[in-house]
Image 1 (spheres, rainbow, N blue to C red):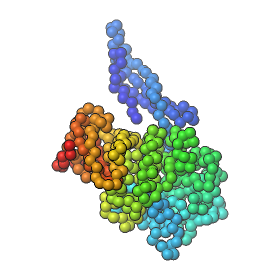
Image 2: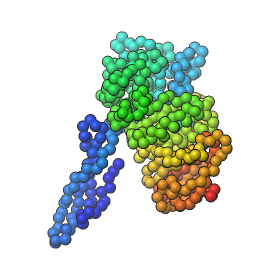
Image 3: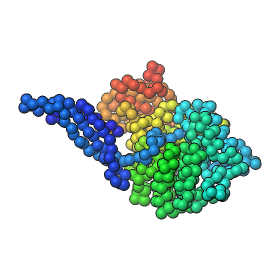
Image 4: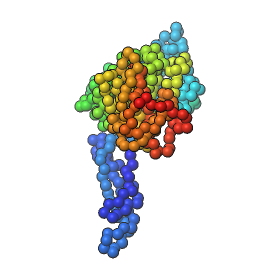
Amino acid sequence: MEPSCGFTTYSITVTYCIWGFTSSGTSGQQKLIVLVISGNFSVGFGMQHTVVIFLLAFSSVTQALDNGLMRTPPMGWLAWERYRCDIDCDNDPKNCISEVLFRDMADRLAEDGWRELGYVYINIDDCWASKKRDAQGRLQADPKRFPGGIAKLARYVHDRGLKLGIYGDLGTYTCAGYPGTTLDKIEIDAQTFADWEVDMLKLDGCYSNSSDQEQGYPRMSKALNATGRPIGFSCSWPAYQGGLPPKINYTLLGEICNLWRNYGDIEDSWDSILSIVDWFTENQDVLQPAAGPGRWNDPDMLVIGDFGLSMEQSRSQMALWAIMAAPLFMSNDLRTLSSGAQAILQNKAVISINQDPLGIQGKRLRKESSGIEVFMRPLSNNASALVFFSRRTDMPYRYPTSLKALNYAPGSYNVYDVFMQKPMPTLKDTTGFVVSINPSGVVMWYVAPAEWQERPKFFQANRKSDPFIV
């Protein structure tokens, strides 16, 4: 956020400003301080003054974890939903949790166009470790399934221009029963991950209590930073404490974590998607302000390309996750992914919306009795994204509205249909239109003021547009 300093007050023309933040203790809030320097000005008494300095304190803003990472939502691939804790490498060698699986997925991200779109993380989840620590008390990978160790796998991933994430648990055991990171092991485990050149840590909360979590998550954040290696930090703390204040302090989370799981695990089903969307929208007034560059709410993995979603539902998950400024971690088999699923996951317009540098999480604007919901996310350059979402199961629904009805300012707007991948006619805010939305599907638009000339690369303005249904 940069304050505007080109203003005139009491005949004083401000020409230059310096801005920054100052801490206010441990409250998680900072004051935005602006040093404003003016040039010559006249006060009406025949006197010329050369320099005037103002010190302005603006409203408080939430501090983010100071590791410089994940300024946009992280993207990549995560093993858990698709592969769970399959450790039967004798009978299922291609799909078990092993270095073979993670090398395969790294190859796919590097060779099939994913990396260039921003999908750069290859994330190990539970069940990677040996059941015992080594003689020095350090975690170690299962020697049969990861014979080269995590450090060698990290080098393989890095050689392909990717990053490696790993899983731990702030408890006596991980959720699947492998060694956990108790409070006395936090520093040694943080250093072990750094020594292995890991780029991200997800710290779960099984077999821990609220006191462990209150001490452990901030302590792990500090320990990771102390290693000197940039390691993105994903916390599961909120999911174990109900996800809402007063048990969860999102200001504090923004200081110690880059992202956090708020809610239960996703399943490969449409009902699971709906339950997550419902929880996030019902609590959006609490969750939306918590998100921003370097600090993200995480509604869990993308299950597009698995077995539980139709193509319409897959587009819906992708669109709604983009509106929520959610991390985009696929959990699927990239080796056998269908062309339809790949097209959804590689849609450049949806990714551009998700990765918007403002980092403002969107909100639901409308919940209609017809089963239609409308979501909006503010974007850079006064643009925005709209999602018209149908919860209906019967037939396509024709939803009438206007941009004015959706709180848009007076003016004309260019519209790009994200999944049709083409521009629509210019719309005035007062122009009525009808959107036809398929059952359990979405229509997603990128909307920008018509006078704005710098359009995104995906916005092919020279292509023929289709008329709206009016």
